[in-house]
Amino acid sequence: MKKQYLFFLIAAGIIAFFSACTNETGYKTLIITGQNNHNWKASSPVLKQILDETGLFSSEIIITPEKGGDMKAFNPDFSKYKLVVIDYNGDSWSEKTNNAFVEYVKNGGGVVLYHAADNSFPLWKEYNEMSGLGGWGNRTQKDGPYVYYKNNQLVIDTSSGIGGTHGKRREFLVRTRVTDHPITRGLPEAWLHGTDELYSLLRGPAKNMQILATAFADSAAGGGTMRDEPMLMAITYGKGRIFHTTMGHADEGGGPSMHCAGFIITMQRGAEWAATGEVTQKVPWDFPSAAAVVLRPDFKEITLDEAFANIGNYDIAKSTKYLSCLQSHLRGLAGDEAGLLNMEKMMVKVLSDNKATAGSKKLLLRELSWMGSDYSVPAIKNLLSNTELKDEAEFALARIKK
Image (tube, helix red, strand yellow):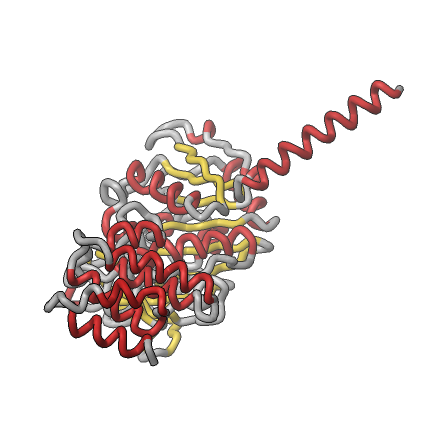
């Protein structure tokens, strides 16, 4: 009896250990792909990288049978996952799989619908309720109204017409419509998105749906409606939460739409909300503004070490990203004397580097003029003999000595 009890304790400890390890790896996430009118071989690995990069998710990709294949063989156990990401637009799943997915969401499972996933399953009632709005697939007024903004007013439009269109790919301005939702809280009122398809004329049940952000579909690009079309949506279905983004048309390696920091960050935040109902991620310093698209070529936020490694040969005429990174960190250190001094020491190293450009030193002198201390004075004085830097050095010294 004692041996059995001891075995039980050991087994329980092992289970607890592995459970803890599993929790530390992040929310278990399933990305479904395999059929699409878009390049799913390019998009799904990028989605996995974007989500896993946060440290909140542990993603795996499942590939369905090819078009015309035996869909009965596709029968994932959704209950194993905290989040399911749909990167799929193809053959219908089996009734068994459909029912399992519906139960998963009803019972609180999180879902992300990505780009052409809202083209999928036009005849599947529950899926269309989960997506809120969809396009193509012979969708018409029978499938629900158009929902959009016109003159800053939400419009529910029951007029007849097709469901789904888009014009030429281009950059476009995204407007945040709901500022107090966990996904969009802290985002700018407007931000520029990288070259992408701007989905328009989406229609559907639109039940339990909030439109979080829109974009104006200008007719000059073709396929335009001259109204603000939904880009980001939050839907509830039973106990489940669905984040729906129409953005992210994929090229090889992701392309400008998936490299866009706005797409990446809203995807990460939307996924966390779908999985948990909350968003713990801070809005990073490089979230785009209305002035310019911000691209993350490797899908990662630039670190402070990277910024300092590159600031010495910085050309502000080509990019402001390294300066913006430094400024963001400096703002976050307000009142932290030790942190500011550490930053000052790193800036002084650049000022003392003979290989660093005059342009980069001018930028740092401007920052040191308001946050520098006696520590940086000797390095700044050494620049007074440089005719190109003399004015900025004198200005910085005058302010530091006040």
